[in-house]
Image (cartoon, rainbow, N blue to C red; front, side, top):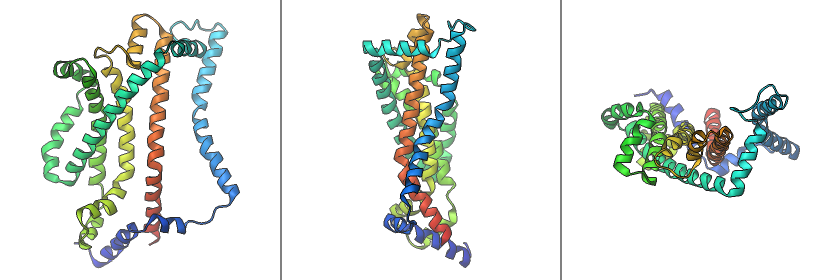
Length: 299
């Protein structure tokens, strides 16, 4: 059991979690309009700064091809890739492939997140479940994505169910590991103080566990989403007739490097856009967690 000083210190932290968002907002210092404008400019400048490197590389390769230093046959210049994208967009194929892939990733991500969160929470909170389930899950995690393809074809057929299941497998493992690891890393002294205050199970989760695991959980979601985009390519090898993975395979079979690069560019854009969406959705909760951490430190 911790000593009285430790209990007193930890009790402050637990009490600080009960602060409402209104109290946190009231404690913030007033910000001048000029500071707000500067903050907004910096906020919008950061994504533009991230575009600088790919734009420089694309421009450099375009110049190299136009100067005749490379024929651009195997690695087409950006102008040819964008022309291919324009052709696909005009014919309606691009939207059809993007819609099919997005639907698969969304469904697979949803199922993988639910399964990974539930099982990760159980194994992180309950030692017996961790000893029972974790060794098997870690062994399954080492299986390559393509090794699941023939098994899912036999079990689920070649239609959407097998594709979504394969994506869910890819999303499941990082979410499971992130949730379990985050719960195991929670300071046990804080949990003991919560028990000393006789917090109920839901109150313990809301006031102690959730603020502690939320940052790691968001990271796990982002890693899982990235693997979901990787697994969708393997999934769309299972008898797919549409999707960006199919577009890649079609470009390879027909010898169209511009189409392959066009599909890769779309994958990159969609992957970054969905990752950014998770950041936007999670930002208010993480700001609350940061504010709570600062208040706990002041206390």
